[in-house]
Image (cartoon, rainbow, N blue to C red; front, side, top):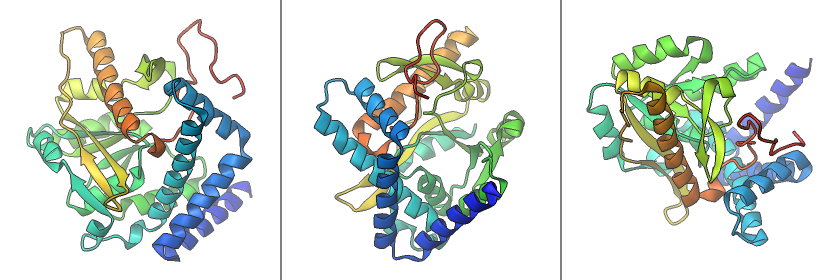
Length: 302
């Protein structure tokens, strides 16, 4: 019964945002997220802690401004997600423009496939959807939602432009197949990872457990690792889907060292993107939750 109620609420909210005019949908969704941040103290406390950790020299006013911007960004992204079915190749340029696309094409031209390195920055759901409409669909790494009906709805929306999910239980086999066929795989690489699946690397000056999957696959396949993210450009009043040059891999012959060093490189790229657009990252995520052995918890309230 609980799952049915959750699905009904989510379905109703998404459908409502989808039929509202875009401006109204964005205002409503941003206001909803702002309210949730105010009403959920653990969420707010995590965001405030993360900002103090990442930007210790900032004033309290600067951090509050970023939190307001984050709430707005998350709301806007929810509205864009609800409107995904309405976007087509004919109208996507009204919402998302390509920037630095030659970097993606340079990676693709190598013929070994592309790993689209990204994070929860800007409109991450819209970025891969729009890129598919521009003619470059991808496979994306996904963790199935606990609510099966909601999971089906989310992946239905994500897949309407041609993108396809890769679930954890099939990840290795499917990833190798996609890259062997010179395809593209999108991976969000900015979340806390279980120690058995990651390594600790520097992220905003503090060790953060980070997935090693990207480094291992890239080293094995020689796929190009191309950073990409869709951020809101206030002057243009559109999202820029920005691609950075492919990340050159470190290869010393020591596999575990190479995995660690390349994971650090990828993490530094994501950090630099967040530093450019701090109000467009998800500070409510407990990114530093898992700690190296012997270190105390940073979020004792979680």
